[in-house]
Length: 72
Image 1 (tube, rainbow, N blue to C red):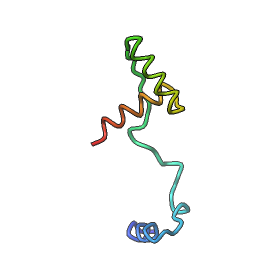
Image 2 (cartoon, rainbow, N blue to C red):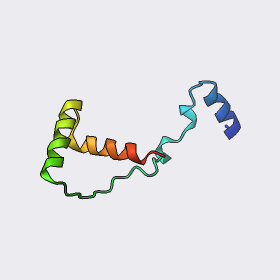
Image 3 (cartoon, one colour):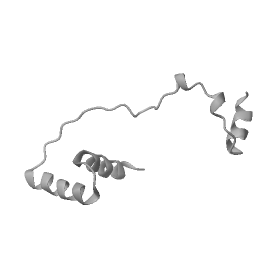
Image 4 (cartoon, rainbow, N blue to C red):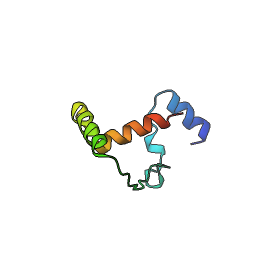
């Protein structure tokens, strides 16, 4: 299938998954890289309060907030 045919089928809502080699797929820029950050106790306590309020982990909250600030 040519790219233009694939694009048309996709745009028309057709199932194109049979034309994709999923074994070669990748998600660029999503590999994890560990970083360590030290926060004062009052910051950690505030993060924990917000995380509990939202029903997420502290780590998930930090990731969400940083990602929001980095959106362009």
